[in-house]
Image (cartoon, rainbow, N blue to C red; front, side):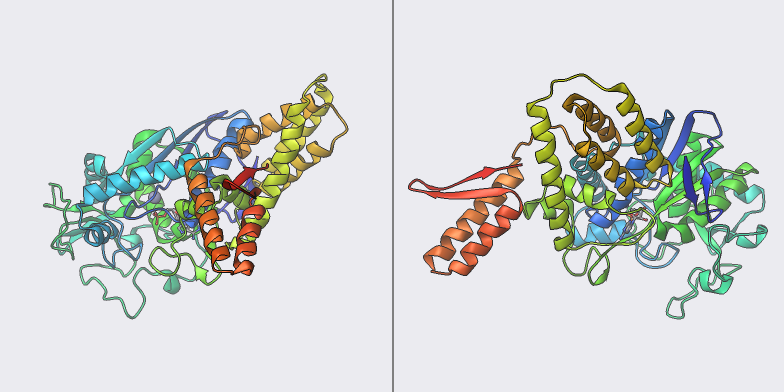
Length: 465
Ligand code: AMP
Ligand code: ZN
């Protein structure tokens, strides 16, 4: 398989350390709020990567952390602690916030058919690991103590900026003039491994350490969790592009400083999803979550398909118009598949199966080209072969695509609630003689394959897929 490696800045042949077994690490969510659909784009594409590796015959062990401590608003050592911010906002404890949003995150994964990584590791469960690694980094001279905090000294390495080719000055942590620099640092780019002098006196979670009561920095969490569960040699590390610097850059120097050898070979980064105004946000504008999409009548898998239609290394702009187009594509796809299912006799043509499985593989092996893989799926529908052969291939491709292509459609409670709300709004519009609005509502429903009928008993509906 060929994959773009952020580290070499090239598309490379993916060769795991250990033949057919792959060790994969994914930066998990910071559980201070719901995940927005941008965060989830990242997890969808990582899921496709894992399933593709499985499809190609690799055995994948995947680990993901849950960041429930240490992630400050700026991604470096400045700004407010995100978890504390969430707890204050909702008048709850940090642990309550973490539990609630971790569960919400898992719900989102389920709705989007994202397989939960085999190993899920909350950051707060691994304090001993951080202490062990930081102690060794201090012994080896990579870290130093200053003003009560433990810092990593980036000048101890030949090349700190391994993942970026930016000019050093532009990349320095906290180099913005409006950020008050920590006077305890030897170099501007040094970052905190362990805080005891917290800027937040009300920090709820603190642990004993050889350096006093405190808490870990965000970056050390991922290094330690990855090394604990996946060992000294990692094949592939994933995240969104915003993680490249400083988070992943810092993970590399911590892990390699500790281990004394190269740690991870491939770095996989998913480009951002933006909204029409620009960067996706959890605090400004419409907070785009999976639940919000559901409340507007969209099956979450439409969003999954929306993501698969474009390449993971391209920025993607979210719009409802775009999602409606994807909805139409999905409906057509399901319609065709349903009619194949109604008449699924005939023999399986093994030659065609092999040919199209190879085409599907080739698309994915080409730096995870999911839109080409979808084209192969549409090609299969147009083939002159038996329905049984087509259904076999569709089922096979869906192991990676995970779009419930063969599943019978059911109306879930969210969709039912949405339809009833729309019917009610239309009734009101008609009572107010606002027929334009009534028609708009009917059209909106029809765009989602929901057809309404006015009868003497009231309005009924039918979902035609
Ligand atoms: P966080 O919960 O902030 O730690 O982010 C979780 C994951 O989502 C990280 O891997 C981020 O890099 C990724 N991410 C954040 N914003 C976006 C976005 N707009 N589009 C895609 N991925 C994102
Ligand atoms: Zn991480």
